Length: 246
Image 1 (tube, rainbow, N blue to C red):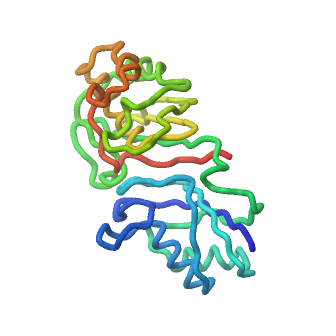
Image 2 (cartoon, rainbow, N blue to C red):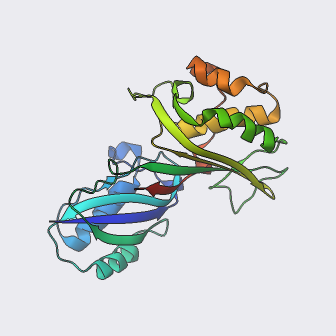
């Protein structure tokens, strides 16, 4: 059995997230890729991802792996996959790895980016990949406040109220907030993420940047472990999985 590793780029706009779900919930990225692999390799394939992205969330380099008994050449497999997959899902890398590699459990950290279009009018071209926010934001203040999130903490205050994760302690290793013309980028690297954690952190930072939450409040919200004190959950379209580190 060969263990094959995929790096996948996708636009999640038209999908009900990564993970296979009942048909009533819409098509998923995992289901589309597995169907394509079955068509080429002529065997049932189960792919394992580094993590599940939600409906509307994108990826520049999602990592997944699967086992196959087929000796199908990798170069032909990559070409075949990209020839059949829809235009909003493509395999950017494909290689064979050791039998112990697991895309989720072998991962050391992940980097997510949230992109905000911060100007007075929205963009037809970027509408599916950014969050349009027309009000002025103090990026320097947002960066200063975000520093308290670095390190290992209980992030319950930024977990969705219906999140089921038992382990709510995660380590944020880097958080960088920058502005380039009309775009604000919020990059967060951590050893793991709770459900909606990034989107809730971003929503809180936006409230701080606009002056709706007083400076010095982010640390208090973090320590409170109270979701109701944090900001809104921003839309999924601005979120992208940039990289998985191993």
